[in-house]
Image (cartoon, rainbow, N blue to C red):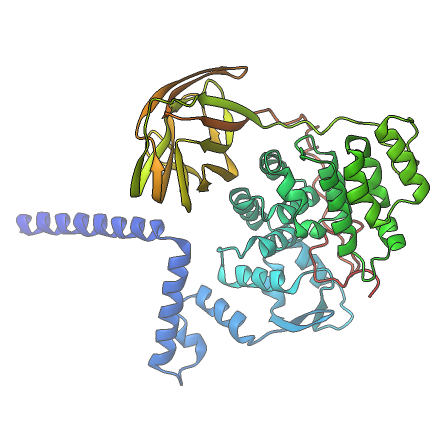
Length: 493
């Protein structure tokens, strides 16, 4: 009997350990995969007995709430969006238990007891928000919609979703989606996201100011961008043309007079004196935003014939905007080396690279490697972890998000290309910079590193802990400074 008891105890311990392992494995499983498994299980349950009441088909409260979202059953509230035909069937209790703002809103009287009108909320983002509330959906949509979800999460004081959106955008912000992300970062005063936007802006100002998406930004965000210390354009005409693009996006009929009114508040931030006369004549005059007298005054000032700026454009700065991007030439060209051809190869442009202080790498170029084909470029640490990715084109690669390198690590830049010609030989890197001493190895050729020094963020006054963040207005009226990402008709319609 004692032996049987011992065996039984061992079995209990074994099964207990097995259950623990299975539980840990389930926890490690990605949330999205778990949700898909649950959906398949629900579908199987419904197919087993279609006549069974839905409450009996659902094995837990989560699957029942998901059913209510999909079916609209027992709904006691309809959400509508002026100017959009879609409607969303929801449940007051579910919304109220998800957001203190929605709870307060639904406690008060509505114009129609069963209809909640949301003129400020983008329908697609609001619909995703409902999927998150009912189904715990966590895979955020594309960035242009994710920024709208972030604004809704902040507006409705959904803290966990707020943090999830911020983290998602920190990883996704790049040159292409910069106007969307920066606009939201300014609107919500997300300090970390603003710092990341600064890193993207510094080496890519020309591309960002040339973007047609600049029109999604609010007036406040555009003002902050034009004042930003990281804004460094090759020509001030790009700043002026960005204003024209922004102004035209706000107007149904962009006549010169209406365009002037739309961009007038930004003209004092344009450094007209930093333009050449040719640039002014080619890019400013055709827009007809400035009067003839104002143009003559500015041309005389640019030419050095006078020092009298018009009232509409009073900026007296004649220097170009300074660049935060620095350049380090790691190796010079060696003439005593020969290149080889390969159908495909992975090449380390730089390896065992060390920096004495934190830097952000924005671009790498190398004359010792060339290919007509594009290929992936990756910055890796000593453990082979990929820290940043870009696309190698010709003889260089710019990283959409500058890659941070720490002083206590070793790094390399790997490129994988087809039909490439390269020098299979390395030289020692020994470069003295203001930032310190760069060391490592690089391909024998002209290898150039473009980077930014890590700077501490500007000090901002700490928030008052005793004063909570004011909730956004609950009335059906737009805020004073909307983020301009909603589906609103352009001015003049």
